[in-house]
Length: 179
Ligand code: SF4
Picture 1 (cartoon, rainbow, N blue to C red):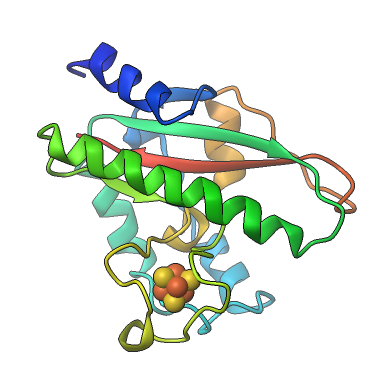
Picture 2: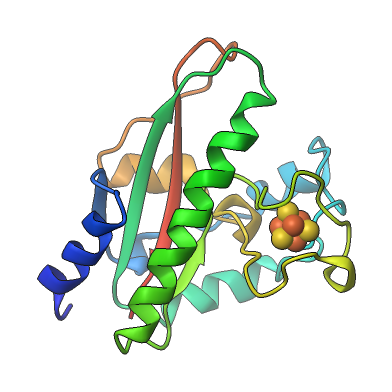
C-alpha cells in the first residue's frame, strides 16, 4: 500500500473517522448472499444497483482480486422508524462519493465505492439502469456485490449481529476499493 497517510488525511477531511484498511483478498464473497437478494429482498429487480442488475457472483469475486488495498468504513446508528434509515444513508453515501472522486483525482484511477446500504441517492429509486436518475453517481452496496458482510467485517474486528428491531443500533459498512 502506498501513500496511506495522504489518503487517510483525505478520508478524515470528508468526516470519516471510523475505518480500517483491509486486503481486498480478505473480502468474503458467497453465493448465499445473492440467494438472499433473489428470495426475500423487496429491492430485487427494483434498483439499478441491485441484483439482477449487479454482476454475477463469480465476476464480483474476480473483481475484488484486482485490488491490493481497500478501506472498510463503519457506521453505527439506531432509528425510530425503518424508513428514517434512508435519509441517513443518503447523506453518508453522498459524502462517500465526494471522497471517491477526490481519491480518483489524486491518481487512483481504479478507485471504486460500494455504498453503505442501498443507493438511496433519490427519494424514489428507478427499477432499471436505463431509468436511473443519477447513473454517474449510483453505486452498489457490498451485499449487492455478493459480499458476505458479516464474515468480512468480523474478520476485520468490527461488530455486527442480527437485530430484532429497529430500536437496536445498526452496524453498517461501506467499502472503498483503492488500488
Ligand atoms: S441514483 Fe437514484 S435512481 Fe439511480 S440507483 Fe440511486 S437511488 Fe436509484
